[in-house]
Amino acid sequence: MTELLADLLQPGPIAMVLAGSGAIAMAQQGIGGTLSALRALHPLLRARPGADRDAARAALHQVDAVVELYGLVRTDRVKAAHPFVADALVTLANARDVEHFARWAEDALCDRSERHNRAILWWTTLADTAPAMGMAGTILGLIAMFRAMSDPSAVGPGMALALLTTLYGVIVANAVAGPIASRLAQLSAREIGWQRALVERMTVIARREIELPVAQPLPAPVPIRRPSPREAA
Image (tube, rainbow, N blue to C red; front, side):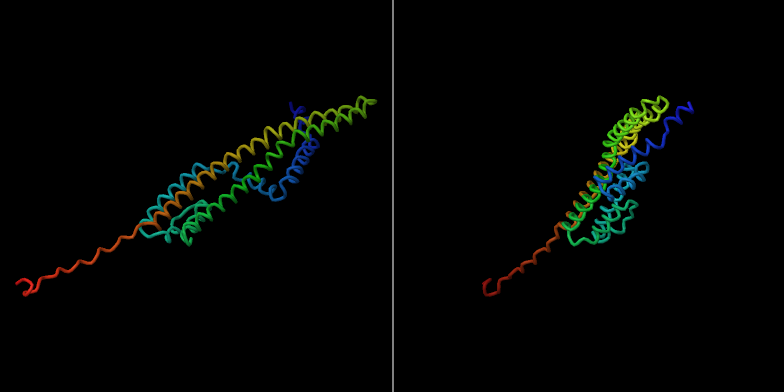
């Protein structure tokens, strides 16, 4: 078993598949997309969109209560651990009007979605190109085999290259890059979903506060005109 694992774990074919697929992904998505894809590995296991959503809802209840008592300018006093929620509270407190906050929210969500998509596309590209790089390694291995047909003892390395690169291409595509891209897409959809719901609810609260009808003063009482003695007579 140990010898089999040693034969399978060949650094040359692994490096060929990973380097070739990574280079193609970088060429398509750029350096920025590559950096986003690598940074996305950190929240891949740590992200808890459900807990973040619940914390945002709790903060939203506090915002509603603060607005009822003190108005929109005090919403930045509400504590929030998530950076997006904290930025939304500060922006709401300092916004000139509701439309200003709505524009900020839409821009922020678009930026986050674009950043997520860059990382997802990078890993998707890696999953798509890894089998092709494996086939390229297979062709190179077959060429090496044909060149060594006169010496049967030299056929083995070419055959190993042909088979291992195909194996690594399948593993990278279906066991590494593909699941990472799928997981990131799910996390992105859930995160953008609760963040959009949050800013929509905050916008409703802001409109309600700004458009709250002001109590009209009661009209002044009309003085009662008493008839003069002459008119009474």
